[in-house]
Length: 315
Ligand code: CUA
Image: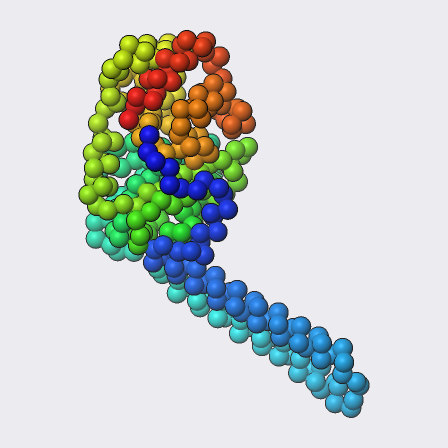
């Protein structure tokens, strides 16, 4: 299991104000301009209010009031809204899909409540963890298997909805090597808040090595207990929902588990991928994610130990 670097705490979603890529920078700029204008209007309003409170009545009070209504009620909002509209329009040109040559294409499908991730050019399928090469344009093809979700990596790019039977495209790049938290940004049911993912931006070589290892079939059981666990996996029906390449398990309603042990988190970035957490998660999924579609299969202690040993061998 990889060393955990990322803070899974959801407050890291404030990362949109700590941009690590050109698209996110542009979005943050728009935010700061809107914030600055908002503060300026607020301060102006408070100053006028204070002046009004201490001002005594005089003869030209009526014309001053008219100037305030026309200036503050019509001209000022018009100017502010026009500026924000212009700034947003200019930023949208950067945020939408551009004409990058040969971007890295990643297909992401939203499910209740996890992310299916495909690298169509490498025949790789994984879940809840997206690796991208740093400094290169990545194009996401987003769709949904059920309800509307929204894909968002605040420190890297804008957010975009995943809709059933439609493919939306989103493009951005990461400037810095690092791990970034992603989230579902559209309410999609009970466990919407626990529909996170991890984005790993790494140098091209590391990215290719990762892609290579992910395209391999699952490692064969080495120890007896792992072989026994593989049997349990098939017997209790895990394979009806999950796929493990190279085995009879080919389900697709739940995350692909071929390289489960290589992932940093479990349950869509809800908990870290440690032995204890894996045992808790498989033992009683609803304890960690209420309403999750994975049932508690009530597996006996011995079978459970074997199953966990097998899952942990899936590097
Ligand atoms: Cu998926 Cu909210």
